[in-house]
Length: 100
Image 1 (spheres, rainbow, N blue to C red):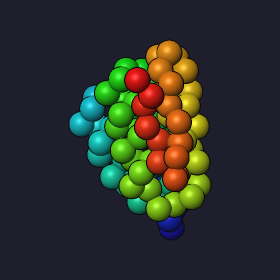
Image 2 (image 1 turned 30 degrees about the vertical axis):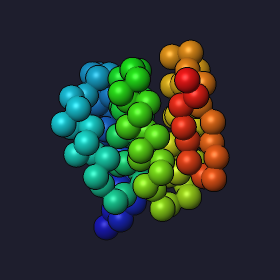
Image 3 (image 1 turned 90 degrees about the vertical axis):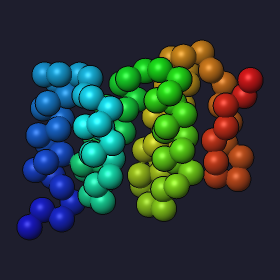
């Protein structure tokens, strides 16, 4: 089997190259996956939306994520998107917050 979602993960990677912005509904569907390689591409697609709503969604996902590897991936996405948006974020007690 493909327990980690490699096959679908590769398909999502290819799709993101062809159509960079997936719909919000598609992204949410991908983010609901329990497979790392699938969920990771959902995170990339969400970050590629590049707006404050995406940043807030990433922060919420980070707070709820139990998998340390995915949490690290989300943290990196938060920091990169915040920098692109010129927004300051900080992590306190394992949770991110936007600094006004």
